[in-house]
Length: 261
Ligand code: PGA
Image (cartoon, rainbow, N blue to C red):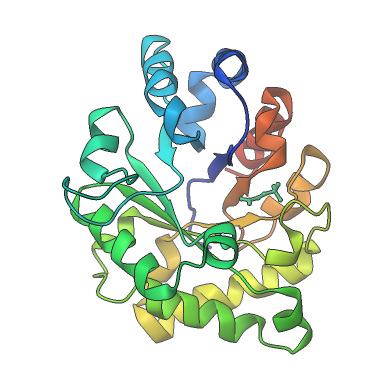
């Protein structure tokens, strides 16, 4: 089986304040050492106001934990009130962009075309990209899990070359499992991940891309279930929400991923 470096993301969503961000960042620096970041790629996604301080604190501490943004505008700087450009993000030390998260798809109303535009712009700007995909409960119950994942990948990755895929991570996040405490069983998650990888292999790209792309699982991943999830052959890490707000829990999940490396 091809070996892929595990990849763990911490999606802080719209949580914390200045003091909480400072404390969590310092705790993460202590809990996640250099040997760990050698073995596992770790990225945190703070809210916009905290990106610069978190990037600065991690850099000052010599940490290899990367900083990602939860969203960005797909175009260059200019007259777009309220938006934040990739150039600005890069300027403050951000090198990863999360696109397609279900809260942006289903709460904010972002469609596949916009997700694709952001992903292409981020790759053009030299960012790593995490493309989140996943089905709702209704879609799962209708047997549409793979079709939804394939559709969101087909649209989301339109125009991306096989070479550019080296900078893309897929995050499979069944919508019904996000923040609900309900986790896909390791077997169900593995089944979905295998189908995602098969589509990369035969539908969109080739063997080399399919074997190399990391596919994270997201949806109520916690220290207690991380080992069984990341132990599956096609699960290469996780995108963590709630448990990423506690340094010890996040570090325990990273340790579980490291144990598989
Ligand atoms: P959760 O969130 O771990 O709180 O379910 C995951 C995510 O939305 O990325």
